[in-house]
Image (cartoon, rainbow, N blue to C red; front, side, top):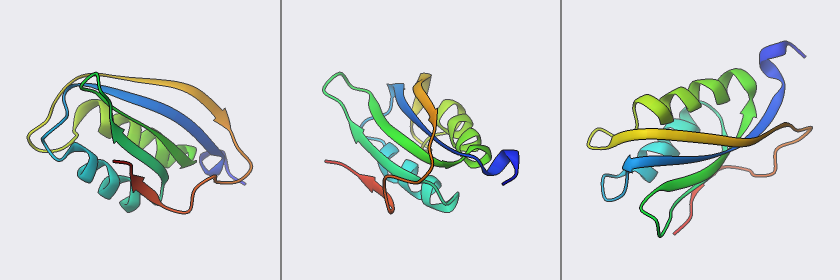
Length: 99
């Protein structure tokens, strides 16, 4: 397996104007486009959080997207990533929005 194909899992939380701007829908669409699995949900603190799993190269692309792009009407202040670890298999079968 090539370096960029190693599977990883990482948790994320995005801060800024990320609720009420279709951020979860765009995050799900971008994750699926990259072939990632995981989930995304709003928090009571006004942030969006979730987990990404997939090949490290694709996860890195998604992390950059979460930090810099987001949905068209969002305004991202910062994105935190933690609990990154190498995994042997994916824990999810798709990318879900959790209500």
